Image (cartoon, rainbow, N blue to C red):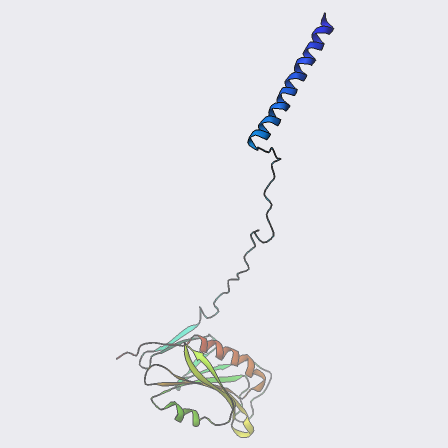
Length: 206
């Protein structure tokens, strides 16, 4: 009797499986239902998040000193290595250490920036700058300006860069960087350009 019962159980299970398969087949054909394996979404290379390449650059002028003269509507920053000449408050000066020695009027490692503000026609100021070998246009605080480079003095011993700006007022601003030390010209000229980048023209105090 026991073998008969075991055989009957196998028959019942087989019938249940057959009914299940037939039911799935009927449902699939009647309703168009397709039983598919579940696929994980594929993330393409273009949709993958990319790491940020933005670089935060520290403002090296943040701790610079600030010069402001509202009588002529001018403000700018300059580094600690520069200072105003005690006898000429319109001239910034700097001196760098060097192994060169002073000879006559030559002071090694020395450079200056002269600030000149005048209510004159720009053409008159430009034609009075002698020794110019290069004339280009740059922007200073959004104002299109003339940048003149050249050399003056005996045998062109003094290299200079003069930037002439006609702002939206009655003044013409001239920033003239100069040095006799040709070996340090590029280094100090870079600083001059950074100082120029901080120049702002502000309302003139009445």
